[in-house]
Length: 235
Image (cartoon, rainbow, N blue to C red; front, side, top):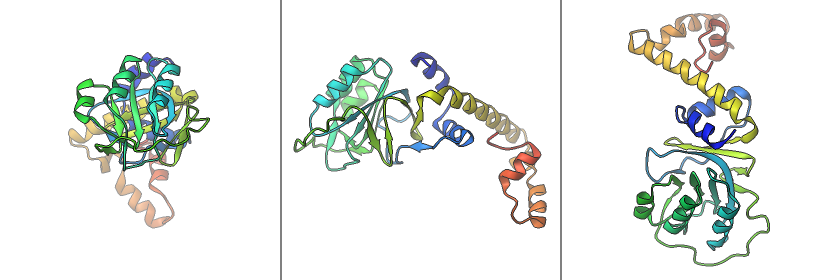
């Protein structure tokens, strides 16, 4: 899927829709840790992962931009460190100039006011004033993968971000997941409209029936009930 189609289809979805789609498709739900948030609320990103493992020097990002394609998302692995910032305004400016869709940082940023003015979506754990204080040895595979929380991602993955955080999905399944997410979105919209029109969610999913059936079968799960009555929220 090309970047234009990815952005167009994700524009009407949320990462929550995609996460639910992953569950439906039995794809691991790979969310960045909850502290990874957009610097500017309301910004979104969607693109192929361009990974970079930071070792104290900005050249790793410049090399990542050199290899990236327009629409990619720079995913920076700084080990989740909160004692230094690894991305500042110049890196964000360069990312915009290279045509990237945004930046995800497993670590901190700085130059917040300038980053807000630049407007490129940046997601990070937070901000601090100091940049790197020492230079470590650069791993030979520093541009092959990046770890964000418990997940390791690479160029075969797609990063999706919104106000709920960042989700990584396999690039070879993104079309399938978007289609599932669109179905989930449409179902939820219909259910929301019915609630606004006076039909409670309990009525829609026949919750009273579920409670009665559970008395007879305590092992009955709510999801099993939803499938039986054809009212599954995630369907």
